[in-house]
Amino acid sequence: MSDFVDLSVIVLTYNEEIHLSRCIQSVKAITNNIFIVDSFSTDDTIKIANKLGAQVLQNTWENNYSKQFNWALENCPIKTQWILRLDADEYLTEELQTELKARLPKLDNKINGIIFPLKRMFLGRQIKHSTGTVKLLRLFKTGKARSESRWMDEHITLTDGEVIEFSEHFVDDNLNDLSWWTTKHVGYAIREAVDLLDIELGLLNLTKEQVKISEEASKKRTLKRRYAKQPLFFRAFVYFIYRYIFKLGFLDGKEGFLWNFLQGWWYRTLVDVKIYEIKKACGTDRGKIKAYLKKHHNIDISN
Image (tube, rainbow, N blue to C red; front, side):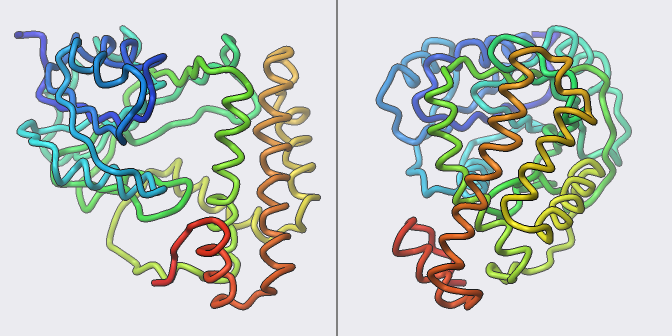
């Protein structure tokens, strides 16, 4: 018990039996406050969570990650100082577990958020090139952060305080096959299309909250705004060439080619197809676009 740190873990799930045990086992060495917020899984997700001692809450998924995560923040009976957000297909390395035990209890009180570097695995191989070092804010003080209200590319945002970086990694390693992966990204494409259309046309009318996102997230957001201004379809091709050639994605072998082709070109082209369809039907009329999204994709952004 003395090795535990004062944090709770939140994991959102839906049919994650293939990943959940690995995820939970990676945090059990540092805490026994593990909350699984499930969207009524039909596989053995709940059975695995209960067996490993996690607390399970269920809430209906409304096609919005931010909404589900913020519901978890409001409804999980969290009594710890810190909250760690993990996806079911992610896990902490032993080195990060050790770093958390050593550094977290000694942090200055003004620190409210912690960023970890991400180690990305694809088809069993680490992707070391093409996207550079990805760093994400995943650990934050209770009551000091929420998830942004966005359809894609949502980040944890702090209301106040400072952010620091830890040196050790957490790992993103999805074990499903490519058929599952492509189906998932077909679903992501319309949400990404909404995000890009919002940058171009201001669909969402989001209020400007006083929040802090990480420097990494801010840079990514700036690049995304530049990307949104480039011509449809051509931008996806250029993005692939940039990642695969200029960012040395070819050094990651066949897995690197597939990662950059599928995630950097095929998926981005699919997003542009969605945008093309929407604009062909609605032009740039925001009212028509919102009605189209609700009718054809069950996405309600009529705020």
